[in-house]
Image (cartoon, rainbow, N blue to C red; front, side):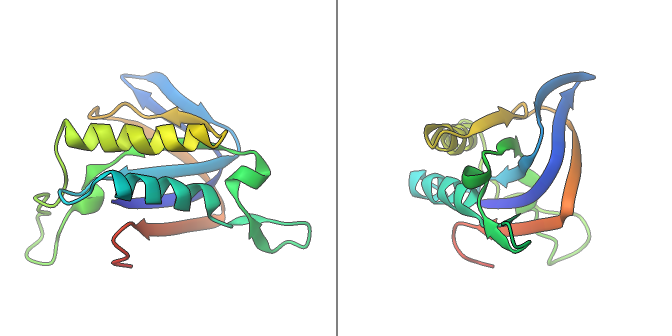
Amino acid sequence: MRAVVQRVVRAAVRVNERVVGAIDAGLAALVSLGVDDDESDAHAMSEKIAGLRIFNDEDGKMNRSVEETRGAILLVSQFTLHGDVRRGRRPSFVGAAKEPAARILYEMVGSDLEKRGLRVAYGEFGASMEVEILNSGPVTILLDSKRVF
């Protein structure tokens, strides 16, 4: 499982010009599920997202998590994070999980975050979405449950 996590001032997702999910301060997490991912990857990813210390403390140091700041999370499925462009210029997506497994694990990440008391807004799984992110910092972190990076 891979994720691009951004600290945001606000973020929103639109489908057919209709807002389906929006947050104010917190994190935007673009998440991709791999063919070899399972429940342990979903749990590890939600724990990592919730605990990332990328918010400033009173001394201006990135030392606080979204849980500590009581921020929200916008969770968006984005299978293209598993795009492989090592050969050629057209990405191969054979490493990306397909439905229904991908949806189940994506929803599990969101459910785990909600169980931690976080407010989670969602993109629409499988839809063509417009994602608006106002990045704060900018702070952008790459995560991989298999610890590839």
